[in-house]
Image (cartoon, rainbow, N blue to C red):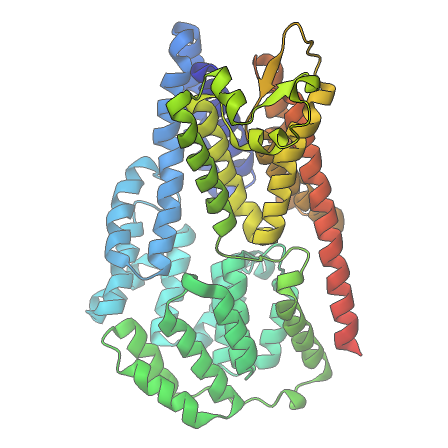
Amino acid sequence: MDLNLILIWTVLASSVLSSIQIFDQRNSRARLILPGIVLLILLGAWLSLPDQSGIISGAAWLLLMVLPGLGLTWLSRLMGRRKYRRARLLASVLRWLHPFDGMWILPRLITAMDHLQRGPEEQALAELQRLQHQPGGIGRAARVLLTRVQGNWSEFIEWIHSTPDLSHTLSDGLLLDAYLQALGETGQIENMLAVCSHSVRPGRTAPGTLTAIRMKVSAFCGDPDWTLRAVSLAGDDIPVETGRYWMATALQAAGDLEMATHTLLELAAHPQAGIARPAERRLRHPVRQINPALLSPISQQILHHLKLSAGLEQNALWGLRSRRTPGTWLMAGILTVVFACELPGGAENYANLVRMGAMLIPMELNGDEWWRAIAAAFLHYGWLHFSLNTLGLIALGHQLERLWGTGAFLITYLLAATGSIALAPLFMHVTLDDPTILVGASGGVMGLIGGLLAQVGLRLWTGRTPAMLRQFAVIVCVVALQMIFDYNTPNVSSEAHLLGLGIGIGCGLLANGLWSWQARRARRNVSR
């Protein structure tokens, strides 16, 4: 494998796919500058220094696209866990690499959030008052924070209703979450349920926002069991105190004032103002007690379907099944251990790879050693081969395992990895005069792409939206670029890649069919 060629393809594919994803986001089209700059660097290097163009453009790609992407993910996690001082430091660095989406003023917002959490509150409120007039996401976030601190829920509802296009406004997950909370805080439970029914879609609303909305709606509806389920699903994405606060809210709405008061008093005594303040306000202004039986028939039906969808989320067709990905890390760890075992004898030594279980081609050379189809899927030819497949496994495995769960992910990956190795020799034109070997986990990685392709394709079949079309187009482009790369790169088995892709698609269709059948059966049992 040629590192320079691989980097050229990686930079080209990543920049094109990023451009496709960004283009439809009207508020973020300025970010097209970054992949554009990377593509210009790639073109200039190819014209002037073709043998080094991959290295040069790869360095620009890493600096302008990869590092900012990883940094923004880390920043989101720090803010979600209320580690604001670290988040402010990271945001101050990231704004130089990613000067879009309000990043230049984001440290000011994070500072205000830190002051709300620890004090002084007056400085935080003054800063939020200034920031709420900023355009874009920073201004919206400041307005929501200000509303939550001051409890001006009625004013927030009036502001939402004054926007020119309510449906467009509520497509913003932050504003939708805050609007539903505002309706719940003001006792407009039936309105809250109606908005939830029209605006919240598991396939379109972000999983984290969907979980937060379910947690709050269930609390305002006085259902502690449903609230506990939503809190459990959120896991480490929310602080423990936040889960306890909404459980206490659910107990208040259900009429269990003694237990709710006990929990809120503990939270009100917390040393951090950001935890104590909401608890104190909830003690002073309890939520309205709810008797679900007194809701209108339409509201009861909406509530029933919301609970049903939450209860079936573990078996839902498009549900987020897991927030942790132990299977991905397990497989990456096994690949690493096996590769370490290759090194003493040489990871590019044919005799060593054959001894450890490489698949021999043509198949007659394997004799009765069927186990080679399994062993070869864990071996790699050199550092570059191992690194690319392991990174691909980690990147794609996290997505698929979160969607499908660990069991389905592992079955899909292992079937694609071993099946592609076992079947590829049947389609390869290799003679006994010029034998070769086949190793690598790339068939398994392509199986993960196939699984994602099946998942998104089914979503597109059941409910077409621009976001789904864009996501499907991105995956199809990835497959097309991979095939072009295979055709133009020696010593790469396109047969194994295509077989892995096909096995992954088959597993995706089978798994989703099974989950759909389970969901229909569960609905029939509930409706009886």
